[in-house]
Length: 208
Image (tube, rainbow, N blue to C red):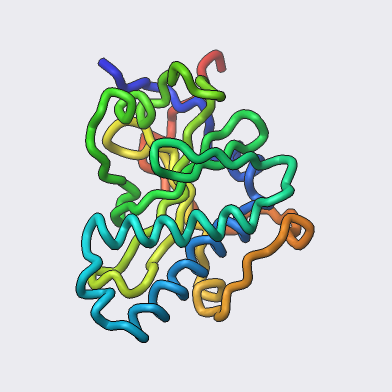
């Protein structure tokens, strides 16, 4: 069985490691949403033509470009572009990628052998960080794909996330335009968003 039983990283630990990056991560998605809707408003045929995978590919490119700008020169975050996506290597221990997810934080990708190892937090041979903890910066669209409803930090573990927590508040969602902060503008703050636990709350770290 591929699925591992114990999370390598717990929610509170993730908040400590990337809490001061949440503003930038959220902005990468919301700025892409703003750009996407502006293009579709100017050219309605784009929204009609770009559906499903086409829309996802275009939107992911917008998010990726925002990430390149947001984290350029940030010594704590290294960008890697592989397998058609931008990934953020944080603290030499986290492998974070932007993913479209549903309301339960689940992503959908073709189940290749590598993908199964990726979402099950197993070693990825040939990767620069083979044993990194994988996290999704998951964004959820509304049904008509015109508005981002939520952006969350997600720990994928098999078909269901082990845990997730939102980094999107009503105030940040309504703040337009969204400016991509430079690393110097990001202020370290403790996450104040309510968490959503998926697995048994009694799960503890291995060895404790």
